[in-house]
Image 1 (cartoon, rainbow, N blue to C red):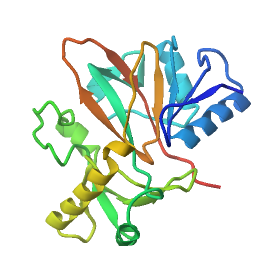
Image 2: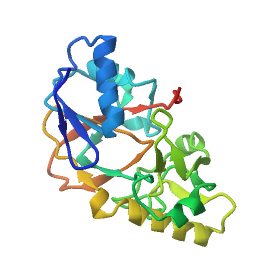
Image 3: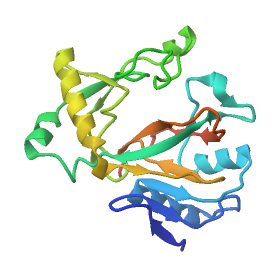
Image 4: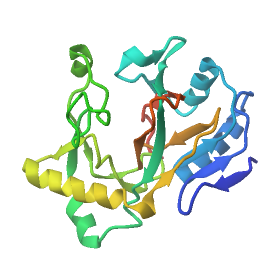
Length: 239
């Protein structure tokens, strides 16, 4: 058993384990249970090579290389290198908050998503998503997801990606859709649902994109730091 510490009230867990060492299937299953229970999992003070980091991430599922491939790690294309960025995790649990009328209204709705940020379409802005080449844009078609989406493993219903990448709602006029998405995003990112993780050297943070929002927090460009990020494909479904 690994020691568990809560990161904040309601969600998030920190465990004490050295993931540079071999992990049995039973040991990793315990890590995974902690992750799905907490939605944010922190493992502090690790010392991993790029290949060790990629190998640990792959235990959660098949990796999905990021579309901005010019920033892939030279030792493993599944690792995206981010500099001068830190992350905030923001929970969006629909089961725990929101009026019944709103839950009923959004239950049948599907959001329209593509790469970028609906609040900042200026590719040169510091808060916009990294600009894509024409070839990279061709890899990123429009997709749809339920706004009130059941988690594929736990079944928990959460607001899905209502901030940033959601640009519209199927069958709804654009202005009405943006107003609704903005209302849901404001609810989801209110202070009581936020957690800001303070990174230390070697810390690993795993967050659940199926049920959380995450955001980059701008820092001084002279404050050097580097993050490695791996995205895992969603392949499993609740048994």
